[in-house]
Structures are given as structure tokens and as C-alpha cells.
Length: 91
Image 1: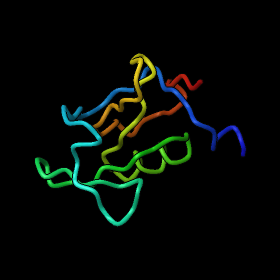
Image 2: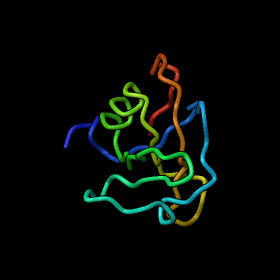
Image 3: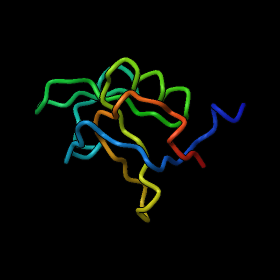
């Protein structure tokens, strides 16, 4: 697995919109890494590496990203700004 495919943490990521829902509260779909939000009527994609994060962000998709500041495995849900990725800090 390359560095860009490994699990990651992000700092300095700005969201155009942050969702207050939880990943587990979204409607399941036919894919494990995609759920549906009935509130905003959008698909939300689980992203666990840099390649998927950048691809979904460029397409304007809502994403679920692991929040490393929390002790349990929780996600930040929302639509990140598609911008210069050099300002993001990846772990």
C-alpha cells in the first residue's frame, strides 16, 4: 500500500458545510463506503485515504472523515472545500 493509500488524519481542512449527523445514522446503500443523508438528500462517501479524499472533494461530494481528536471511531461529515491541497497536513 502506498503512502497515498494509507489511512490518514487531516489538519487545516475547511468544510463548506459540516453535517451534525453520525455515519451510523445515515441510510445504508448497496456499498459499504457510501450512505445517504435523508436531511440534505445527498450521498456521503466514507474516505479513509488521501486519494479518495481528494477525488470526492474535487467532485463536490459530501464525505465522512475519521476525527482523530475523539477517543472512539467517529467521523466528521460534510463537504470540504475543493482547494489547494498543499495547505492540508496529512499524518
